[in-house]
Image (tube, rainbow, N blue to C red; front, side, top):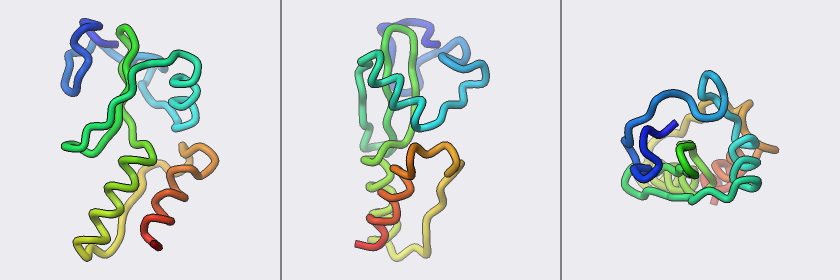
Length: 105
């Protein structure tokens, strides 16, 4: 939870997990939260990550936009591959497919 709803950017002070006790959410849960609550969604190209916020709820995550940017960077810099954390938390393989399609194109 954000300490101050008006200070909602990256590195804003928080006072604990927002929605789940341990702060862990699947991509499907995040998309459901966005669909049901209409938070402001932000993509930060500097840190290559997404976050959304509404009132004192703040959620940081990777979306298809950040996944595509990260895999594109790996390809363009001739790195040998990419790593995905907690693939089981993907929603209907949305993020995994984005990474695979970006890698293969």
